[in-house]
Length: 513
Image (cartoon, rainbow, N blue to C red; front, side, top):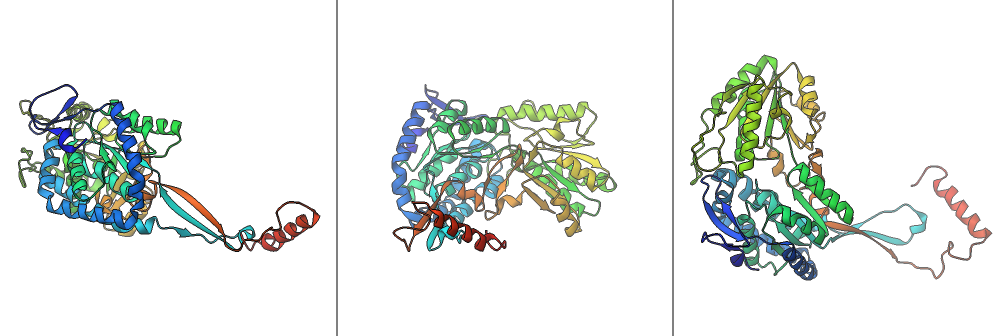
């Protein structure tokens, strides 16, 4: 099915189609096909048939397609931004910083890195049974990868996962979030223009509740980004099938501000990464712990900046600072967390009051002071434009509270003593920890990014971020093959004596193995 067949203009509702709504205005911008389980089965069969030829192109052939796609992203960046904004409601700058920049980097990175990261590896072995034999480890594509994507970053956390899977030689079934399918369909068109063979990448649009299980049942590996609850279900289904999965799940990322921190930088960074993308980022700053001696000053600096943030409709570059919430359900969560904190004694120093008559799904940037762990905003994932701040006595209390969470995705420590900051960072239970920064570690495509605890399994980026899309194979080659080796049948006393002497000579002094 072509992208032109899947996406149609706003010409009204029809059976088997679903609306794509601009969250900033509430207006329908497109209709797309709502596919079903039978469509998934057909797509998987096509992908399986197309995959061997794609693998046979080798790294160089696949990289040529990826580099053309990199140029496409650069040349069509404004079209890509408009598409992302139309279905997410985010600011144009959010889309450019976190999605277009990421896409341009990812195509080039994986085109260059895949041949090195997945190259055959000659292994030096110690066993005397392998003398004269060559041992090689290779990474073969698993076959068909299912990428189930979230709505908050339709390129970066959706289509972005397809890039390394494709470079590893796999075919991909990409299931974008039902609310945000347009970016994936645009990039499917782009890759076809760049020479990707038919059916190697297919975008399956429709409801996750309807298509999720059929996708898991049809593919050889699953990459999922989304909630911990849904991730657990996918992991169970993958376990039943004995196929691998990689899960990037929820987060409640902590930011710690010590008394000696540069408060200007700490406040600016905390606010930006709490409100960026409307706070709808698994690795956004979701809670702050500030040492008592600088607490009031930090809150004041954050509040001063937050009060100036604009929440206009994202009509173009520079139009707004903080965009809309992408799905209406998230508005309810944010509202409940703020109301819960207010009711339990927190101070809402900025925001907290909605514009009830405004179309679309909006919540104002909100700073919550005097928060504590009895409040949902400090312990549950909010995923919205809020920054709750808690006073702590010292670094030890801050670390204890940061670790008092089922999540462990990212965290930050601010201090002028960089060595101490790194020592504290190593005590925090999270997959990535920054010192005097936040969130930007995601841009390090060369380093693994994954979660601890309930924040997921596996990693994207780094060597781990592409090896996971492969099956490991060890090849053993007997180069100097005897007609009969000493240990072959028939057994006799001499064989036993020779083997015993070999064990004593090789391992008796702890020299090998």
